[in-house]
Amino acid sequence: MNAQRSNRWWSYIGDMGMERKLLLVFLIIITLPLSFISIISFRSYSESIQANTVAYSEKLIDQMMDSIDDYIEDMKRISSMPAYVNEIKQNLIRSNHYYEQKNSESRGSTAKPAPGDFDLLLSIQRGIEGNISFINNIKRGTNSVYIFDGYGNGYYSAKDGGVRLDLEQSYKFWSAQSKNSSGEALLFGTQAYTSNLQSTRYAFTVVRKIVDGLWNPVGLIAVEANISNLENQVAELDKVTHGTSVIVDENGKVIYDSDQKLLTTDISHSTLYRSAKGEAGSFYDTISGKQRLNIYSSSAKTNWKVIISIPVDELTRGVTLTRNATIAATLVIVVVALMISIILSFALTKPLTQLIQLMKKVQNGDLDVTFRVNRKDEIGLLGHQFNRMLARIRQLIQDIYQMEEQKKKVELQALQSQINPHFIYNTLESIRMTAELNDDVEAADMISILGKILRYSIGEWSGTTTMKQELMYVRNYVELLGCRYPGRFVLLIDVPEELDNYSMIKLVFQPIIENAAYHGLDDSKPLMHLSIKCEVTKHKLLFHIRDDGCGMEQETLDKLNDSLRHEAVPKLSINGGIGMKNVHHRIQLHYGPSYGIEVFSQPGTGTDVILSLPLPGREAITTGRT
Image (cartoon, rainbow, N blue to C red; front, side):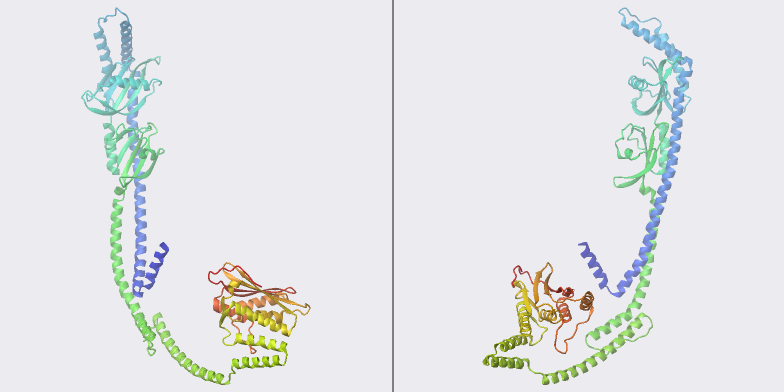
């Protein structure tokens, strides 16, 4: 189907006028280079911008991650301060001692509240929370600091008054996560919580065990920072890159995102997160039909990863303007070029149009036309040759007319001197009857056979006959040979009966048999076998015409086969003989170059002449005869 469409297009272009072809060529020559340059420039510029954006964004991400790492390192340093403040550790030990004693007394049946508990607890709280306020003011942006004793009793101070309402559950979670730690700081990603102001807030936390001088745990400190500390840095990054950002921890949980719609969400199974493999890199994806460039980088300290998604349209906005300007300039150039090409094509095709009109007059029989040659270019040369061709045609017509006149005269003379072949046949028949009357049967038989041969050859010997008649002619000829050379020849014919009505040209087998009898006869052998055998193949009829005569040398055989392939059609000899070359060329002229004669021979063993003819219709050819 595609090949047919392609052929139709080529046929349509081939049938176009010269003027349209020139316009098409000019248009292609102009538009293709401009389009190619525009596409290459657009892609190169676009790739350059995207590469620069990736490099620049990676630097911005690294700077932002360094700032976040520094902030978290400060939180970790703040979390280590209780280990150096004895007042905090002493009060945590007092708190642990008090609640340990309180728990022990509560297990007894006579336990009563100890006097002065309120004053003790108030003293412990003031001693711890006073230091917490100091710690909380060290680092700008820290939201809350929580210190817990060994029994989960919390002491805290918040700048903005927002304190967790789920301190008990938070302590259990932090304590369980830091149970196996040896006092190092642990970082927890963004968590949502409800404050005592009845608002939902998001914060990330650094937790560390508090140990005494003997490295015994006496409590737990949690330094919590609100995500607003990340908001300004991410907003500045998005403003520069015109994209959106998301920060995730090593488990794929969202720390912060530009729209704050994915906070605390697990995106570890999303395509965005799974595509961000390795510590840093970039990749493309498509969301809602829009392509995005995603650039990511990781922090070696926190294992947090920042992913920026930038719409490709934003990156290529300047490139698109350049492309549109290039297209507009291309269109203007094409229009101007078309106007120039129209003028040039008209100037080139006008003389050709005039020449075509003259050719149409010649086609209609007017040979008295002349092309006016005004230039020396190719068109002028073509016009000059056209004029010479017309002069030559007129001369040839005159020559042919004279030759036809002479031919008629020669044919008339030939008719006047020609002997009627029927007269010869009738004369032979009279001689045969006379021989029979005189009881000369052998002479009568020979004359009868000669008459049959003569009758078969009367008229155009290049006409058509049937296979049955052609083979009968061969039998008559061999029988006549037997009269001349008694007992020397035996003929065997094996051709399927279905080929009896096969139409073929005359005198195909007899010249080959005659050639074998006169040139292949071996005087050392008392008998010569001649055979014609038909072989039906898929594409041809192959007739093997064999003799067991003297054969021929390889050099002679090669010359014969070469002459069959390359020499021109031979003429009848002066004696009327028709050789194998004549048969071969007549077959090729009548049936085509795929058919003809090929000779195989060896000295002393005989010759095999293979004659190929086309297959008949769809008739079944199965049986043979002898």
